[in-house]
Length: 176
Image (cartoon, rainbow, N blue to C red; front, side, top):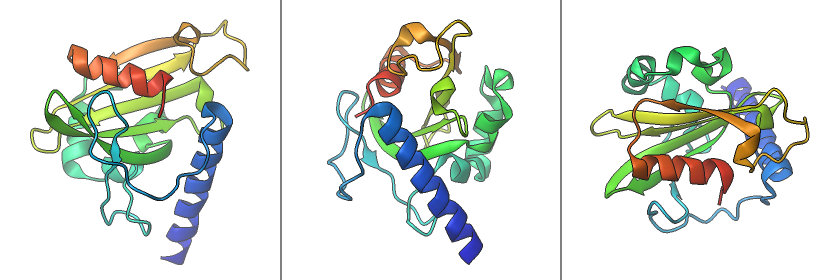
């Protein structure tokens, strides 16, 4: 059990460092923001999945309902192995899109977050899923801005509606 806690702690530290380095965000204050809308910051979804009480993409991939929906997601067959396993993730968040509360799970390629990132929206009540995968364009410089859509090739996963697409792109390029 202590080994799993150490690994989880290591992932949290790596994720925080990656977020600070590439997105300019400082560490979390520990407070939970108010419930989110499509245009505001989402609240953290808390469960007992990890010792910290937070849920990550890896944890969601272990759940049969989530993994079944992910396996059936159109475009998932084009994803690299790390994305199917959970990658380096930030805690899943609850977001509201068109009045429906969904989980937003985000992750990036281990040891190279700016080159590949994934965002998954999941409705726990209907098991509907959609997402966005961003891969750095081959001709983009290694130090290219991660928040510039011109540097990425995008793969839409599933069939997100316009509100979901807007939220996913906003979270990919303007994380708040």
